[in-house]
Length: 271
Image (cartoon, rainbow, N blue to C red):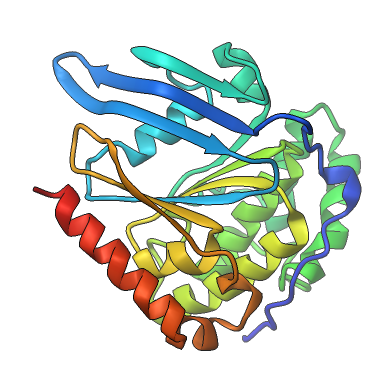
């Protein structure tokens, strides 16, 4: 069954933006696992409401960086803050982390999977469902509230997972390869849908992806990382891409030139 992908107009009460300071800052950030150095030195700043993409070779530390930002790890060296807070627990309180796999609970209906974030905030089952229900039609999920994850397509499962992430009510969203498991056609559709969602949502977002085109289309700025141990090779501004239909955006001359720059930087970073 096909569902129309619409730009979700998320309720303002779900937004808890922090103002007057960058959403995420890192200075001289480095991390290692035992003897394995994963991130050598990284400076990063994500403004409030900005969407920043991270691309780089496999194993270069992109997912580790998200875990550091989210407070799931503490950096080996350097400074890291979310909303001005450096403590790991405080960083975690300000971040909603969406991993690569949707991690939907197979025994719960879609609405209850989405409502888990509200339940974690202390809402009752009925209150959490009431908070999630109005958003299902806006996320192209109308009529699938009672469906189990096994009854949903891959793209629909990712939309439920993204809705759960938004309902956490955190000012910073950390998205780790959200569409990696989808086929090419569904992935392109979901990129356009997420572009619309982010335009409406205005959260601060850090997106990890292996797909340069996806990063340039969805993000305001794309940071290309080197092979492990990661450093920033270059940063590319892509300020207008997601304001246009994906098919038009990726075919534009400016986009093609940006993609070529990003691919050159990736090649340079592998040396």
